[in-house]
Length: 193
Length: 84
Image (cartoon, rainbow over all chains, first blue to last red):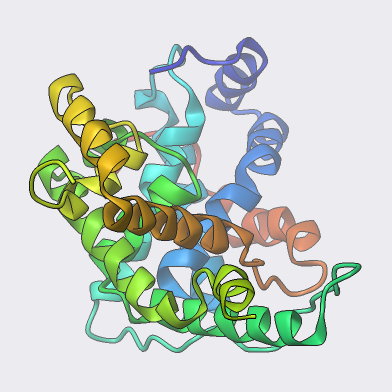
C-alpha cells in the first residue's frame, strides 16, 4: 500500500477537524474517479450519481476511523464499489444500458469502414459489459480502470484472491467472445487482401 | 507447442499476478504456441478497448456535484462514527 500524499493527509486532517472546505477539496480530487467506478458498475447516471454522493457521505462520516497514513483513493473507491454492487444486487435495481450515441471524433486517415466497425465494436462492448454479472463487472472495473492489484480488489470487495482471479478471467473471456468478430480485423483484411 | 494450452492463466498472466514458476511456464508456452499467443493479444485488446470507452456524463455534472453533495447532507452530518 502506498503512503498517503502529505497534502492529501493535511486536507483529511482538517476535514476530520470539521473543515467542510478541506473535505470538498478531497471530493474535487476524487469525484470523477468515484463516479466513474459507480457508473461502470451500475450503468445508469442517476444511480451512479447517488452512489458517488453516498460514498463521499459515508467517507465523511467515517473520517474519524480513517488512518491518515494511508491513501484515500483506494478507500473511497472501495466504498463506492461496494455501494454500487449492493445496488445492482438489490431487488429494485433495474439495469438498463447506457444511452447510445457517444460523441466520437474521426481519427485522421481512418477509412469509413474502420470507423463504422469501431463504433459497432464499442456498442457491442458496452452491451457485453452491461450483460456481465455485477460481481464480474466490479472486479473488471477495479482492475482495468482503477488498476488495483488482485490483493487490493480482494480486500475492497471482501473476497479471496482466487475469486478475484476467476471472476476477472471469466469477465474477460465473455468480453472477448462478444468482441470476437472485431478482434484483429485490420490484420485479417490485410491477409485476405 | 509446449504442453497443454494456458488460456485459463492468461488473465492473471497479463496482470503480472502469477507466481514466478507459473509465469515462466506460461511465458515458455506462449513462445511456442501461436494460438495461446493470439488469445493473449485478444484479451489485451479487450482491456484496451474497454479503457477507451468514454464515460457518458451530462454536461456540467462535475461542476454541480459538490454543490449537490453539500446540499444533500454533508453540512448536517459531521465526521463521526464507524463506516457501515
